[in-house]
Image 1 (cartoon, rainbow, N blue to C red):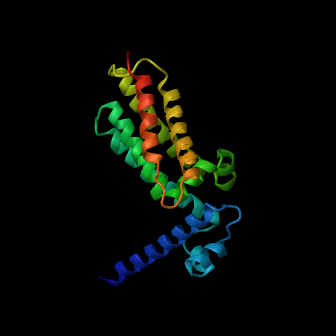
Image 2 (cartoon, one colour):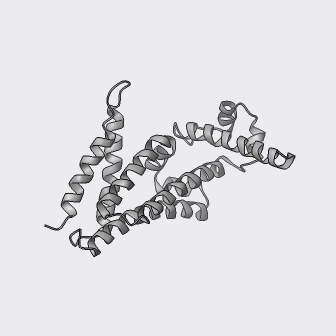
Image 3 (tube, rainbow, N blue to C red):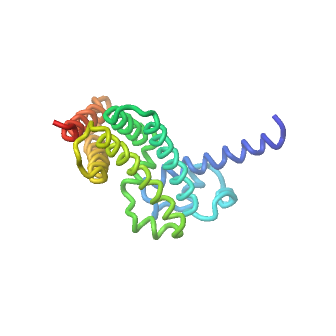
Length: 207
């Protein structure tokens, strides 16, 4: 490995370390989290963080846009498989569940922060970018519903409304089941989501 490549990897490792610890602390309260808290948890100096991020808000944006873009790319890939709409909806639900577990810190930030709060934290262009990514995720669900309607699998219905219902159903179930999770006890998130999806699909299908 050459010197340039080694330095690049060392730099990326520091950035990843900063993001990892910031994500953990942000979910416990963004406003209450200080740069020194992040530096302390990462066992680096605050000056090191400022070498890569101008402010805590910029760090927040970088984390959010990266993880949300990855989720959006996954949705686009799933929708591009040309599966039947029922299968696609289940695959989207499964990917959302994986995201809520694997990226729990980001998921909880997304679901608890209000748009008005994001506008206060970020510049208009960065706040707009995050909103567009989240809107795109919802649009992917809407497109699946619309495709099911156009192909005659689903009855005529407002696809955007169904997408919003689907999204809120998911978040409600995750929150309810997470509140009931206990160490060593069965996790009902996946089975509950599957049952809810079946109910939604039954309501969408043509009689």
